Amino acid sequence: ITRAAEHGNEQEQMVRLTEKIAQMERQFETLLESMETMTKNVIKMNAKPELMEAYETFKRDLD
Image (tube, rainbow, N blue to C red; front, top):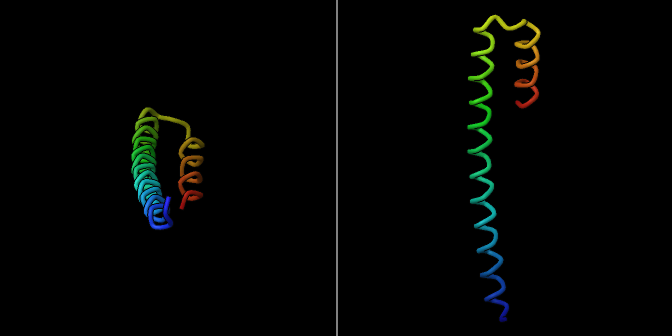
């Protein structure tokens, strides 16, 4: 394999890795949105205030 071919291969791998990371970020965002929705639903069902507090702390820690 020539150096140019190796370099091209490395670039291709980096592009795939970058795409995979972007996909994972989108999945994570979706997961967070789902968690937020679930938490709000639990709160609507008269959940204990500690639950909401724990969720808010978790969310703050993420930021």
